[in-house]
Image (cartoon, rainbow, N blue to C red; front, side):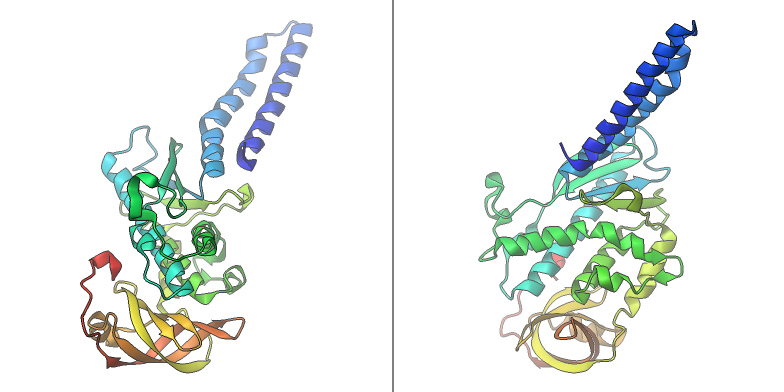
Length: 336
């Protein structure tokens, strides 16, 4: 039994004790036991129909998403909205995994691009979705799908930690913007940008009948659960337009990988003395970036680093293609 389930069980035990005491008093004073018991039984029904499913999901998942709004605040939401929400979650978790693995190692890996998070449960009460990230090679029925060539268990744990950290983002966002204290929660600027981008994409637009979404990880405290709303999505979007706040400048050479054309992000790998750097670029580089996958490039601009040392996230000012690949890889759209 996990922490969240234990908390609900403790609440239930307290209510049962209060119920027994109330019935005893009613019997001793000639009052109606049913009338006295009614409010306690109502509390127990709510506890087991709403809080208990949520607690079980949270204890068995790496991340629980709770969607609220007229499209899902019904007993039988449409299949199309459920499939759409599942697809959104899968793609953003996959995106986090690809970024974390790419920034950790220069090796090409099957696992992040084909990662299919496991559904650990669904429950009513708006729409509750529990997601688990399974270790590579744990699913023998799907063979190579979870292979992570040469990657260590440490890389997988980094992916799981990053996915769980989605539950932290909403704490630092208000309608007026994103608090600078988010840097303390996410000291790695590349990871911070990756998770904030995923949170922004999963936050509701308000156009699909979803008013809010909250994310919970098993080690999170209940009172710290915060909602992401359409207004907070706009605040995140504004922050992500100019996410690099420092003035340190530099020039780096490496191979252009993992392009996200919609977010105007890419990674440069095999950077001498650095490894990999996540980059954000402006519209003036759209055409160059789109045609330069796997090319050797030189970028210059302002960059943020871990503890003021290792460059991790750059706002690209200039971009120069040094050498195109001899054979352009024909990757599907979700690999770009």
